[in-house]
Length: 251
Ligand code: 6GU
Image (cartoon, rainbow, N blue to C red):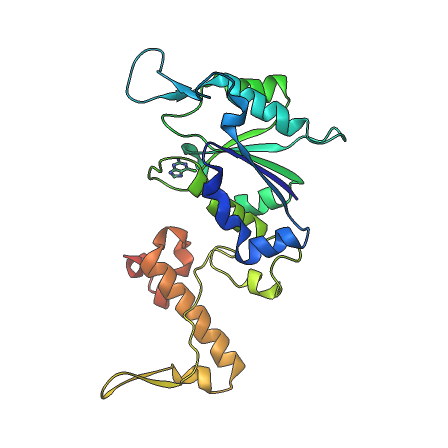
């Protein structure tokens, strides 16, 4: 997969050299290219923003550097392929595991990181109408970040780990929170009895030591239901009410 990120803070994307994503890049599974938007601003101060028409607080990103940056990205391949453009922003469609899967199926993604009050609306039109690109505005959630860079770190990690070969144990992908609509069950490791303070022994649930795989699977499923009901009742279907008691068990 080819990934381009355009930002006025390319250093923000440095963590993408680390851990599994860094290894995927070195292994050639991910061709990640970070571009400095200011390289496409040609005035003396390499300015990328200006005051908003109609008034209001803050600054708006100018259309010309963005258009040139997108031209540059599109021109980077000779085969006529086109990237899907993702613009992170709190006004976008909600990011989710399903959307991460959809993006992971794309051969080429370009993330355009806005700052300030946003990017001049004509850049969206230019990308779609003049360059023929699919543009998706995507939000991490209902809160405001200062720019798209941190959101790109999250989205790239969520997408890249789904690419074949990035995670060694592909099985670890299927039993995760948000893959089947329930949160993950609690996990434990050795020691079976852990003294967290003098005289306080904290035990691993005995079923996990029983060797009874059926009982373990049933316990884990029940834990997933209870945890989902407690933390994310919005994910549960009414028929999944914990304890089979009906809707009153969900509150
Ligand atoms: Cl994707 N970008 C910005 N700037 N703020 C956000 C966001 C994204 N998601 C939530 N808040």
